[in-house]
Structures are given as C-alpha cells and as structure tokens.
Length: 90
Image (cartoon, rainbow, N blue to C red; front, top):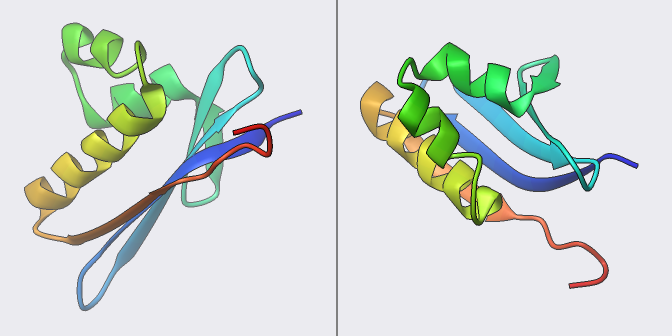
C-alpha cells in the first residue's frame, strides 16, 4: 500500500505548489500538482545533476525531500511549509 511520508507547500501571494513524497515500502514516488511518478523522475524535472539526484534518494529520504523543497522555495522566492508524515508504527 502506498502512503504519504512527507509533504511540502511552496507559495507566494499568487501561487501555491504542493509536493508530496509517497512510498510503498520499497520505492519512493513524488507528486506535484496532479502528477504522480517515480521519485527519480520527480527530481529530474527539478534538477539536472545526477550526483544531487542520487544523494536525495539515499539515507533519510523524507528529511532530504523537505530540504529539497525548501531549496526550491528559496530559488523561486516562495514561502515554505513542510511536514514529515509519521507511519502508524513510528
């Protein structure tokens, strides 16, 4: 079963971008607007450096997802709100 593990909202006075990180326990998926796909593809749309993309998919992926979203907010001049969604077992 796929469940959300982290959420981020980037916004300014006129726009809002919501990103969600999902996992099925094996693979991660990213959602922006109404598009859901493999997390690697989600990252490729936003970054072009393979080393950065690889780093964002290892270790604590949830925390790195929020760092990535905050970096995008800074790049775009947006405000940022993020949260880790805890599994019931945590």
